[in-house]
Length: 481
Image (tube, rainbow, N blue to C red; front, side):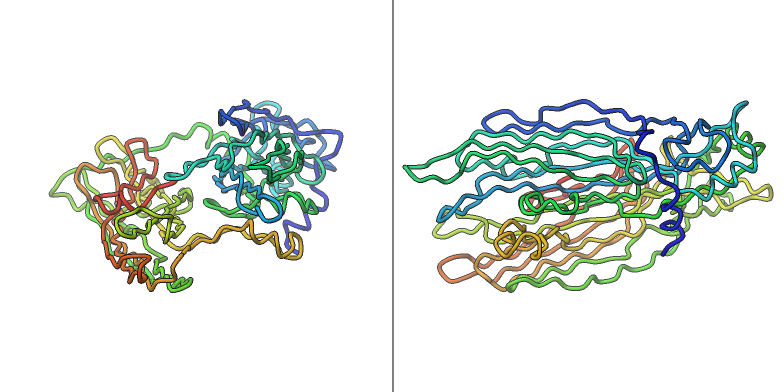
């Protein structure tokens, strides 16, 4: 048993003191025959009393104010709902692709006149006091397909609501209700009238899951993690009251660099080759911007060494879809090749190395924080699958294949990354070259090959963005958030 698990046995929220939370704003995501309603902005309050986080309370003041600390993690999950027909019409009827986003963060004692003593700070540093904020459910951009997919234009709805859970560590319970009207097509019943309900759980360690034991939810929903990771709930190092006051008054120093020289770069590693029915995808892992750069305000100065601050970085991800449609005698046919890909990375700032007074400064260039990328990988997306012991063999029909090769033609999709510094762009850039070769299939698909480039960088607000740089990249790739 881990130390955190042991603490969790005692650090439990009570069923009486349900944690304060903001319910968020309900959002109608679609119009038309099948409606989807999500929400945004839900989360625990930024300040809560201690007894809403732990039970029994380990210090005398059960109402000690706890506020949001400096640690946080962002998480994004792909939630897919699928409903199929019955009997001989067991085809996909309705499908909805959603993004579930949330942030996990730590709680720390609030300073000030009624703040904790140094002893209380030390005691509370042993408890995993974490919360959840910015919870939202929205439609996922699907690029070239309908979302929701509604093959027979049947009437129905999918609605989500959120409540705070109080059994165990504070968490959220997302409940759903889905309704479908009966549907006949040319005298054949393809769907029965039905109503289903179920729930999911969001935990403060970044986990998002179906409530255990809900078989129908397991059958019709699939969860795939896109960004972030399940993590421990580390406590911040205990600070004395004086240190907390000093930190509260501290200001971030900025180093305004005019000239910059990148350091050495470690080459990327080839990811394990993914093969499915003749389609081979070769990605990469371990790519990153330089660990160290040299910055200066004047061209002739020796400059200062700055290091990528991975402990201050944040994980993110971008989903990519590679898609080729078949062509026979000039006629466009159904998708013949598809690959779902995930580009994962950590966006990091650069801090100057400590001076004689242990002072460090954040590097800015032209008024914008200079950033780089670490731990960059591009691989086939690990799509969530149904557990056969829960959903049965028929339930596997609801799974999504990350790679599709309709005619099983010999094909290769290859990626290679390079680090670049681009004039007019913010921070270090990762250029990704790709090429694809498809042998074709007699009377069903033509042979072809293509290549192109894309570039990972940040915009003027510091948000990561993947730019497709040429015609072939725009024709065959779709960037999905």
